[in-house]
Length: 133
Image (cartoon, rainbow, N blue to C red; front, side):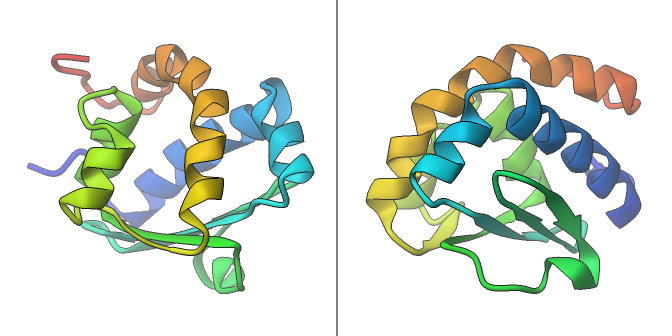
């Protein structure tokens, strides 16, 4: 069974999460400072997400250039936020395929780490059971 019910479900969870990240944590300011934007191409369910320091876009609106593009599964998204998979390992094993400057990807990691403890709350809000998180 997949973590996310469908495309709309993953959009609801990730829009909520990323809006929190860019507005309520230091990460949004660092994305602006380091000139970082993300485009996530997600499979199972299929979804496209664009995030910069100001906004989160989904679907057709998300089809725009970003500094960093990442291809991954919905399950990998979930495991990343639960700290069940580390980004360097996921990149090395190709669970996450990244295009763009890897140093910028790694430079942003410390600013994402405080969000890990909040992810289970977003799961609960959107009806996702967290096992082993």
